[in-house]
Image (cartoon, rainbow, N blue to C red; front, side, top):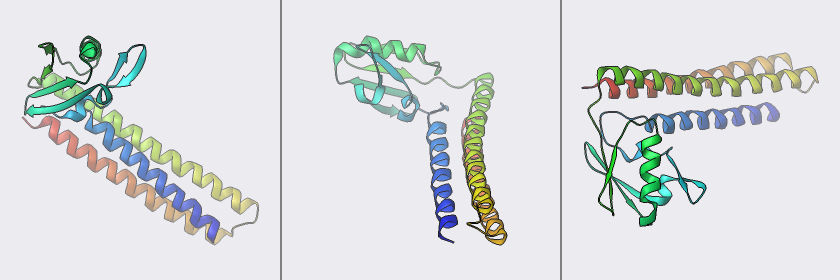
Amino acid sequence: MELIDELLEDAKGRMAKSVESTRNELATVRTGRASPHLLDRLMVDYYGAQTPIKQLAQVAATDARMLTLTPYDKTAIGAIEKAVMESDLGLTPSNDGNVIRLGIPELTEERRKELVRIVHNVAEDGRVAVRNVRRDVMHDLRELKKEGDAGSDEEHRAESELQKQTDASIGEIDALLKGKEEEILEV
């Protein structure tokens, strides 16, 4: 049935977006290594507007423990430093007037556990988003059945297909979580 296939296709796309969003969110969690992605969600108050740091500076990992930010506008250095200081990254910026350097310290055992807790929350948010897509589509399928646009067998087939998609998406999120957790705990 065409309508059911459309619903399932829509669900698949929305679940894929949830998984991708979780992947991006996990990339911003700091591990012991310097990665430009650490600063992806950092917003800077630039002349009264919240601006992503990537639009204000070039971010580069110069080595395993150092990030450098080269602002496109030198007057933004103070605002960028302030944003880094106020973030939850636990990094202390230093600048020479042209470039901001962020040393990435070794993670303490306590900080590692805290980061593992954070990534678990991020993964759970991703799972909840996937389940919400499932719930919405299940509701739509029941509506179709109630209105007589779909038979009982078609509804059951669609529900089991939807459950397979849900399980696959949640499995993908769990795999991302496991990889990130190992990265954090690796000394």
